[in-house]
Image: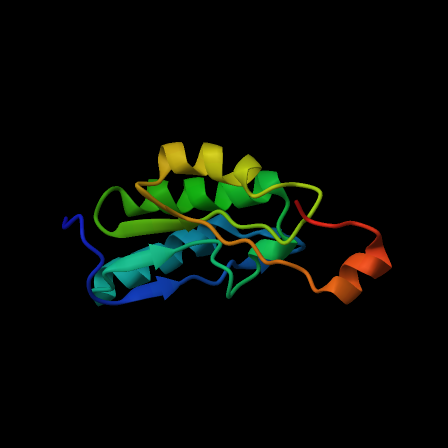
Length: 122
């Protein structure tokens, strides 16, 4: 597998069943992309449900995708968080050690939302 970003990388949807991550369906999605020739997967990217996942759910989604991928497809694990109370590093440090290509995202809230919540980012 190439160490370069090249080809088609898919920002994965996180499947749910009865209010919990559907791990079996998540594994099926990985297999679908491996069979279809996708070059890389992005679980918990910023275009999906990652902001609504707990940190434990986030870590589990990345673990399931890495286990299912078994080195057959590149995985770029999203590690961002919308929370101003829980820095993205709390997700990224554990995810980075498992995924070869972590991706971080940090959104700076508007001044109006900071004034409303009383929380200002560092």
